[in-house]
Length: 166
Length: 188
Ligand code: SF4
Image 1 (tube, protein in one colour):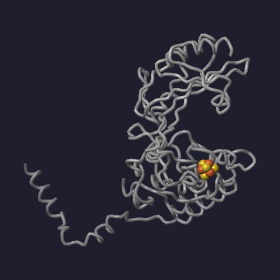
Image 2 (tube, rainbow over the protein chains, first blue to last red):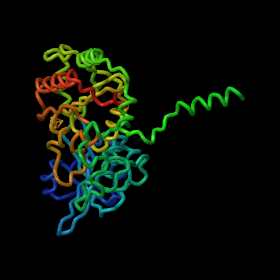
Image 3 (tube, protein in one colour):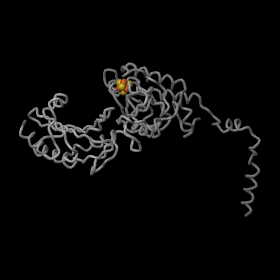
């Protein structure tokens, strides 16, 4: 375990994942984290000259339970040292923003909100990213059903006559 | 006073009673009195040979559209290579790529901003019926360009080869020369 990994695991609410998780994710360091610890960890990585590789969200719900999982990956130039922070959340849960720590987190957090409905607290501009702004629902949730599949779509293909004198 | 009453009498005397006229006959009568057939043909010939497409691409098909505009295939050979950056100057919309739900209303706005007569070419499977992204319950795309604007020519492929788009544009030229005047706000 590197010195940085030791400092990450010493934060409140963060523990190192077992070797299986390391193998499954392809990152040298994998942690499980409480959502309250995300900001502390992000600050630690930033102060160690790491950059944010991505934030993504997964819906892991199945018959056996499970919830949403946010994953944050932090990389550094120069060495092949990759750190992955896994945050398990209940559906409809909130997570803190790290936009003020890593500016690049902005659109990742908006995507997590748009696709999975994770509300990012204190985000400066939490709008939908990919779906139209007046859309309802979060398409990548397993229980998603499109409320209005014909939104923005004419019922039938349009011909020149349909346009009339518009 | 005298002139006023005079004019009102005049207007009354020329005001025909329209209620008894068959509406279809009426419409026929208010069409242009002179239709210059030769002039119209000449205009269509000019339109067909100077199609100005709107500069925009939607996805991978746009790469093939760019190839069509570049030197190897050279869209300028048939006068359609003047891609316009403004909808106000364009008269053909080449829909090259996937139409996402968020983009749909934007494309409709651009189409409405183009002056008539105007034509649309749907390039690739995505703009024909959703292509590879069409499945029950999909949330992301509009399944076919003709669900938002009227389309004149469909070019199949994923993506269509540049030759195919070329064939599509030539087909559109044929249609225009044959008198398909495209969508107009006030059809003559
Ligand atoms: S039809 Fe195929 S090549 Fe064209 S935009 Fe769709 S996916 Fe891409």
